[in-house]
Length: 363
Image (cartoon, rainbow, N blue to C red; front, side):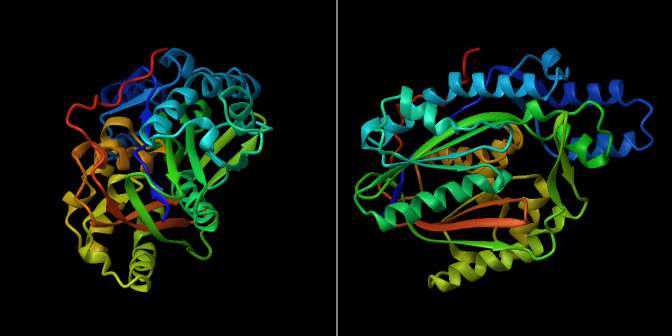
């Protein structure tokens, strides 16, 4: 049975605090008629710090889409190999043992995908399959886990590598002054992550079932408006209410598997904002403590899009895990509005008290 091993997660070194974000909003948008509302919404995110791939002064500039995409490519090539190496080591595999690379990112564009560069430069076999995922946004982390699970179920002796690379700060648009855009300026952060799904063997979460659910008629609620200046983030004010229809989908998947979604041992869910976690706890009748890993990544790193689920999972491993056989749910939420969901059991503790904490990438 496919096993999701411990993720490796790192964030870039440039830090912006909540105080910095609020000060910038006041100075850059002092004439905005709804500035008090914007400040309140940013404060309510609970995001204490975020990490940026460039220093703040460069982040606030817009040299053009081409220049930004060049930064995206160069930074991805500089940073992704580090997490890939650690993820492979944790899974006790080498690059040549990988049969599929799933690469997920929604904050830059490359063709061929970074998967081709990884295969050519990092020791992967030329027969390694490639699966780039670009347009599921924050749900991409969950989708990557599910597609790796599907592949390893079809090929029980195969192994898949998941890579998530998100530089949300490269999508900053200084001319956008909508409430949703200004809120996103205080919410999103940068990060990279990698994890291995082993078709057999390994320790971690033994994946048992996955599913997807799209709320009809909501495709415009989270989207990109693609212009000559790049990706302009569109966020509908109704997005925070989406746990109402999504929570039953999580429950239905668990019921289909013979589980009660209320009584699971761990929950690793995408933390797009605090309202999502509050509502999900209410609808699933689960205490907020169950979402402590998701809340921690939101607080310390902000919303890092597809990286969030992998970072929340990494924190579960670091805590030592819930014990053999513990049942849990993983879920990513994103554009569509889409939920990518998975169920699995904890298979052997991975974490050693002597394991070093995840670090911050050097410049």
